[in-house]
Image (cartoon, rainbow, N blue to C red; front, side, top):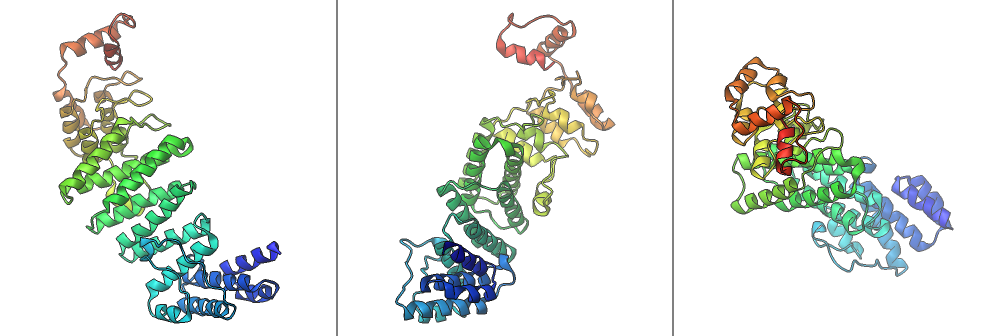
Length: 395
């Protein structure tokens, strides 16, 4: 029955050899074969426990022997996949014997078996792909690990499966690890993840802020690469083109209305991830500069009308004025007020920074007029151009 078959496959997936042996006699020969194959794949996949390729070989061998005895060949894939080195599953015991001394080929065989038996949309199979990629990255085979993650992600997109926000965040983590080891990031992988995050931001309002922070971390990683000039001119153009598109979407957090520029200058911005936090430290001049170079509004306001400059100078741990100088040179207004009527000078915690801001404050006639209108509560809506209304409100 179907219930017995499900129990058999579950036992195989859990490496319960005793249950597999007990249930198998009640199933067909083909069902017994597939249970042995699934059992063999489970022993190769480390998310199920310690990897035991000898056990994996043993059960693959038994399954192939039964297939040969009962003339039940495997159904081959219609096309091969590059991440599996374009391999097909073994059809004979001789082919299996050739894999025995090659661990990588045994892992590939196990994943091919799992895809055939569980299906490309199966959660357990997708988890096996991600786990394999993570192990490769941990063993300094970053590009190979990224290939497995990209394949898993392509399956999710192809079959419209949900994408876990933590899986997307892990991309920022592995990219950070790659940067720490002075290895170049695969540009195709970065482009793919940016595209997926775009899609998630457009359609997944529930986790919007989390995904927006992931996007920020990916931008910061790029800013570190650009600052070190370790990429080609073509890759440089690709990064900038994507970030311009990001900036043009004017994303802000749902909680505080913070733009990417606000977040990049906020000392509370953190991933709580060892690898990401080792690269993405905020406030970050490189990130802010990259975002501004790609067209961000230096005077954007959040939910309580704080500009990025408000956010930055309110940090009491500032040690120099480099970022402030850059913001000022980019056109930051020192006299813009937040919802409490405070200018950046008013919210500055550091006395030296406060003095520096005062030295940079040079009000022009336009700003003086705007402040006068606000100070005297002069009604101006409907009487002036819309482009001026926002300017006056910021004063």
